Image (tube, rainbow, N blue to C red; front, side, top):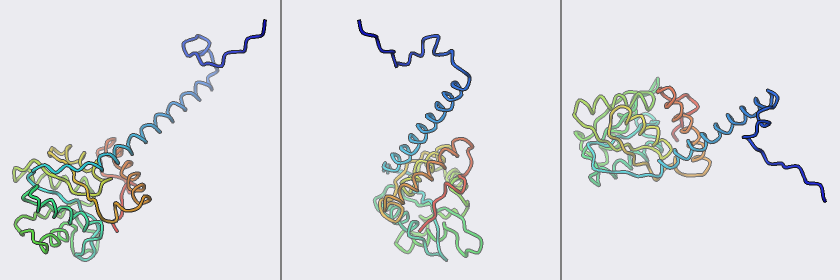
Length: 228
């Protein structure tokens, strides 16, 4: 009769599986934590990517264009892409009003909201259909100001216009503020070109999204994306 080989299978329900030194338990605990972090990280990045692919444009009270860099009244390429997309939605009749948002950096003559509004007016949007909300140095601050303006006008529904990776975080914030918000992300512009750009943006927005979920505060600097 041949000798039987020892079984290499792990049997967690055997008493001997639990009778191990403390340091093995420590290794198991660390491995479980690492696995959980990896899984949560992957799920987060997939969520950011997935929502960024969705384009919802129901009939709404207003469009909200998330601000980005501007240079002495001239929107950056990233900001211009958002404004062009909002202009397309406005012309399609998705909403009769457009809200531009965003404050300014020290030394700037114009706010992001003012630069965005001027851009839309030059392209045919009536001045009384563009509402300027020149407040906020981050997404949460700007959307908080927008919620106040919309409440005073008895508006509830909005389509947020921003870059694809930014859609999940901005939509979550807007809904937490009581708005009936959907997103229609841009399909053109520097923010959607190049694998490296998309990957960096998704990573940063993933960090920002989880940060907001944990603390309900604006994102740390590592989660911001500079406009081009």
